[in-house]
Image 1 (tube, rainbow, N blue to C red):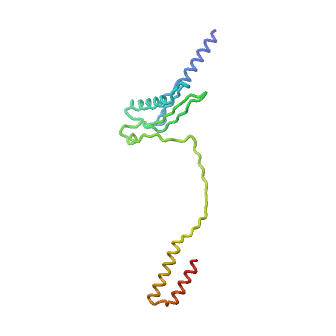
Image 2: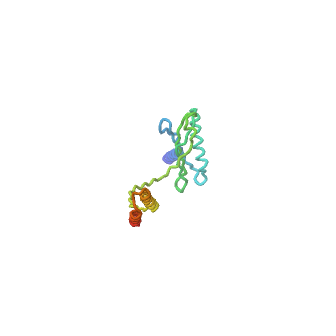
Image 3: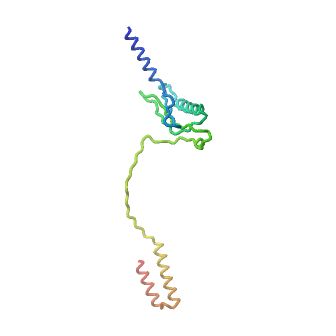
Amino acid sequence: MRTLSFLGVICTALLLSACSNPEIVKLSPDTYMLSRQDRGGIFGNASALKAGVIRDADAFAESQGKVAIPISSNESPMWPGHFASFDYQFRVVDKNDPEARRTSLTPRPNIVVEKDEKVSADIKTTDQSTKQADLYTEIMKLDDLRKKGLLTDAQFEAQKQKLLDKSN
């Protein structure tokens, strides 16, 4: 009988300690974390869990005359053998701090996959418009030399034909 009552006390103590939620944990001088589990099972309310955690974080900051700035959050849904949970990290800053105006949670992936790969490609392009512009410019130079009397008509035609043959 005595052993049975002793086991009952131990089981009750274990059950109560398993149901307790941790309080606000200080991570750095101005950064804190609050984690909670919803032990309501299928009757739990994940939204109420999140709202309660954020409300408690705000109240904690307010008790210090400051505001809570969200840093990140992580939620885990309920499934058989696992209670829903919500972790909330936040900074506590003065109300006049510029950070107090920019309050948004940055979504962070659970898994990050990086792939570094070198890719080399030998790309050759022929810019037809550049070739045509160069050909036109060269022919205009030859024509200018002809107009100035430095080339004869025959020399101009011969040089022009060389340029045309080279461009094809």
